[in-house]
View 1 (cartoon, rainbow, N blue to C red):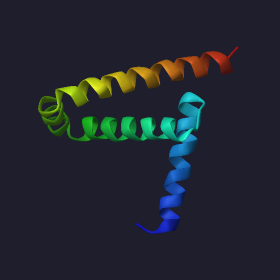
View 2: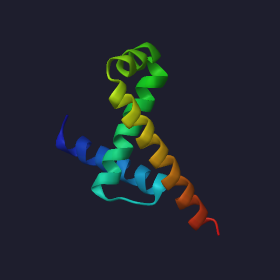
View 3: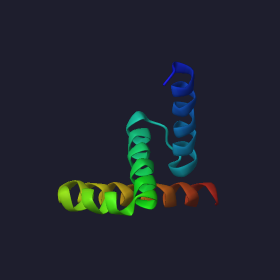
View 4: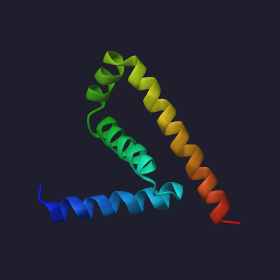
Length: 83
């Protein structure tokens, strides 16, 4: 992938992270990247996600925790921006 496309994709995920949870620190961007990747695979190739979940139950639990954290941050962000 060329540097220009990589830079543009980085900007896209950073903006998505900001809109989703109101934060753009690198650790939050990485959380959202993992969430987006897993969600996309789970929707487009459910058997692959199921296989991964069965092969790595600890990772499955970690992903559930990550998704839960993103949901919590999103709800907080929406609450503070809509009042």
